[in-house]
Every structure is written in structure tokens, then in C-alpha cells.
Length: 390
Image (cartoon, rainbow, N blue to C red):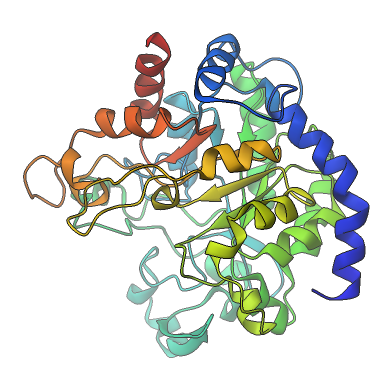
């Protein structure tokens, strides 16, 4: 960490710690029973200000309602709200050649758009090294916004979601600015505050290209008056230094995403920082994160590891460890289909068949997590209702 980042972390610590406590409803430590009680008292709703106005466990529509519509489209975002999602992950943010932020799962768009069917863009196909991994396809940073707007979204995992291909070609790629306007429109239309949960994607990679993400995000949030601590926009990233940079630019709630225990955030790789995610989820690592963020977004396997056969092992202490330092936990991702579920919750072997996702929700909610990303917000809401009934 450079001195600038260290200063930013120090300056933000007090405000961030206070926010973290507020998120947890005024208590830094929540046991399982306490979490259930807090959830029961807060499910009413969407009034109030700040993150603590949200129901707990919070149901977050992952890339919208991507179990039913091609991800990161207004069709997916709208449906997530129609199904009752508390928050919508409207925006995995990547830049265009001319500096606009657009919403795509990855900068490589061959699997999420019809770009391959556009002969005028055939020569844009290339191989790049993305966070150390050679990746072939078409990249948003090689297109202007006007060019990207000629493309249409398609289903990313048709083998698991063949029915979603019905909607291929229906929606264009949204910009982050369009999402912010959509958020305001939907808030007025639905009579409740709509929350969004955008992510900065591959920020180190894009900064090296001269397309820094954080400043662009901050500029748009300021433009629309959504850069405050009670703003209904939670920012997330897999790169801790991206969150630290955002901590200096805006007052929004911030979340550090965490992949598998043995992995290293790519900004750590670039900076020759030897730490892995396993180091970040120690009590010491969590205290450091709590100095500049309000929460973590761990993979579900960091909450409950899987055995060699794919079934669940015993839960870790991550939930209680994170709560002790005032961090919320929004793990990812619950999906209805068999291949994404722990082995004991699968039904048959069909790649597109649903398993016992309600059983999986019950097990994960019982750990005391504060919310979950899901491709199927409707099942998440039903599972929460079941859980709160006891």
C-alpha cells in the first residue's frame, strides 16, 4: 500500500467504523439468534435511511434476475424489482474506448452479446492478458459507446438456462449513467427506494490502460447526488485498493469481495503483496478491511467450505469474526440450478434442473449472514420468509 492509500485509510477509519456499527443496527457483535431477531424486526422495510433500512437477510438480485433474463440488462434489472429484490446488482462496471462506464459481467463480451454476429467487428477479436490470464474475444475498451449500443445482450450460460435464450437480442448494453437514471425512475414508480450494488471490474487492468474506474464512478455519483453515506448505492470490488480509492472519493457504503481462500486479489499480485484471501479473512485482516469498508462479499465457500464430494463441511468462523469488527457479510451466489448447489441439495444430474435451493438457503441463512446475492430473487425472498418463521 502506498502512502496515499495509507493516509486515505486512516482518514476514513472513524467514519467507516461508525457506519459499520450502524449497518449492524447499533451492535458490533451479532450472534445467530441476534441476527434472526434483527431480521424479524427489520423486514418491514424500505423506509428510513442508510443500509440499516434494508431487510435482513438482504436479498440481492445478482446482475438483476439473471436466473430468468440475460444478465445486466434492463429486462433483468426490472424483473429483479418485480420479484421483490431488496437490492439489484445493477452494474459490473467496465469502460468503453471513449471512457463511458457500461454494465457487463466482464470486459470480454463475446459470451454476453451478439458481437460475433457483427461482421463489421470481426477484426476487433483479439487475445489479451486479463489479470494474468490470456483471454480471447472482444473487449469493451476497444469499442466506443456508440458501437456497443449496436450490440444486443444474450444469455451467458445457455446450457444451464436454455429458456433465457428466448430473450437473446432483446436488450442493449446499459451504461452506468442510464442505471442511475433508471434507479430514480423506478424509485418514483414503485414508491420505495431502489438500491443498487455496482462493482468495479478489473480496476488495476483498466488503470494501466488509462481508463481508471473509480474516478468515473465517483463523478457520476456526485452528478446524481448519490455519493453520501446514506446513498442507496453500495460499491464493491475484488481489489481492496479499488475500495480504498473509492473511500477517498465518495462516502458510499463499501464492500470488499473475496474469492477462494488461496487466491490473491490482482492488485496484490501487481504490487507484489504476498497475502491471499486467507490472510484477509483472519481477525487481523478483517480489522484492516473494517478501516475503510463496511462489509465483505465472500464466496459462499468461505462461509461453509465444501468437502471433496461437493457436500458442505462445517461452517467457518468468518461470520462471527467479521461481525466482531462491525462488518456485514453479503456472500455470493445462490442459484437454483443443480451444478451451482452443494451436492446434498442437487436433484438428479441435469445441468438445467432445479435442486433443493430452499434447503441451501436455510443452511446458509443459519450461519448469520446479513444477506446473499442470488440469481433468483423470488426464491431468496421465499427462503427468507421461511427462515424468519423459524
